[in-house]
Amino acid sequence: MSELTYTEPKPKVIAGATGDWELVIGMEVHAQVSSKAKLFSGASTEFGAEPNSNVALVDAGLPGMLPVINQYCVEQAIRTGLGLKAEIHLESAFDRKNYFYPDLPQGYQISQLYHPIVGEGEILVDMEPGIGRKVRIERIHLEQDAGKSVHDMDPHMSFVDLNRTGVALMEIVSRPDIRGPEEAAEYVRKLRQILRYLGTCDGNMQNGNLRADVNVSVCRPGDYEKYQETQDFSHLGTRCEIKNMNSMRFIQQAIDYEAKRQIAILEDGGTVDQETRLYDPTKGETRSMRSKEEAHDYRYFPDPDLLPLVVEQKLVDDIGARLPELPDEKKARFVLDYGMTEYDAGVLTAETESADFFEAVADGRDGKMAANWVINELFGRLNKQDLSLADSPVSARQLGGIVDLIGKGDISGKIAKDLFEIVWTEGGDPAEIVETRGMKQVTDTGAIEAAVDDVIAANPAQVEKAQANPKLAGWFVGQVMKATGGKANPQAVQAIVRSKLGLED
Image (cartoon, rainbow, N blue to C red; front, side):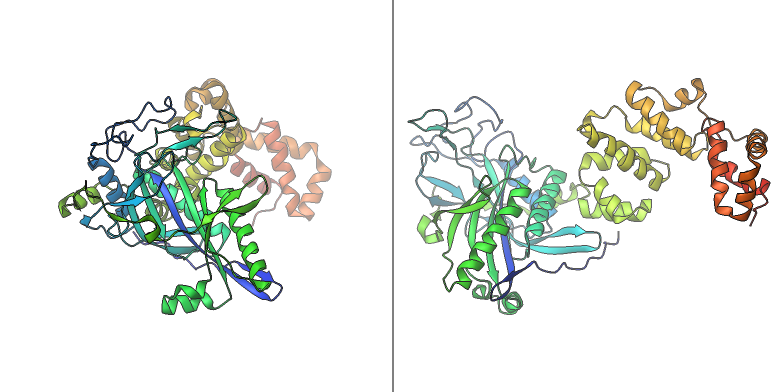
């Protein structure tokens, strides 16, 4: 399967008082591993359970409780790495990241700093057909999530829910390759799409199952190229991290605000402090949270309760052999096999469900016609009524039946839309509906000729005009279609009208 070719988009440029500035963005995405049990305990990961009901003794940090690695979570991380074309490390290790917070009962987080399970990979971020940027993945490591502090239940006290404590996370760290707010949002969207195809994370941002930390800095035009040549990060400017972003729209807004804030500081002769910030969507601004910690601030050291993690190559190979067809490959195949545009292929492959639905409709049929009906008619109607594909009253079998009737010439495009409306509201088999309701289009040339003759005889003035200006022949086609209730074959009508008016090529 040949890949689609892409041209890199230009970096976002912001005009300042002293000249132009460019953005440099790196992402740290925390993706909750799709697993029924936590990373180091058998406690449930069910969302929405009663507070503190999904907590094992080790999650609560009780003395003497030892962590036991969940093999399935390890396999999910490997699966993710392979899906991102990344290097899988057969040997990795867990460290303790020490910090103290009420929702972290152990007083440390078990993570992988020095020896992550997944190394370098890449993601192609689609901006528009033919335009995309390859963003390098630096690493993916496994770590456990913290709990949740609840501050809005009482005016004087805060509460702690430990249900999330110990839930397995994959931290997916990119290189600073992203060059604008829109690219950053598309990067998260593409990463989410890949994870959902792989089945390693459900990507539910509303529930906190996918959230991003965004590192933003600004530099002068040309400085990024110097960084690429030297790998010297000083060319990129001081970065600030915006924590826990869970909305594509807010990611763009936060980056735009933060970049302009940094530019204003630098143009006033100040320096940007490296720090962690939060985005306030109500005010549309970022605010300081804390100074940016370095690795030594967390006093990392190897976790004494966990042996190094050793994975056999056979396991990696077995997981790789079971990988599904991923979005980029599926999109390229749709373009090649079905002759559709890259844009349409992108729409249809956005989710596995939509791709599977389309292929069921297109099975043995005209791919372009099937894509048109799925995207324009079905998806358009679903969007209009705020329904998901799972809630569609029209099945792939029914929509395929409509496409079949068009392909055989039994119905015209106009009749097909009327038929779609009936199937949408009443259900039923399209072929039976056409038969019982007399919707089949007229292909009998004798009947069509009679209708054309009647229209021509009734409109002699229009005949003279059409013979002087052949473009007006379309008026006769419309009148014949109206007279036949839209059932006449439009191509046959057009040919007979031109013949009767003496307008043959």
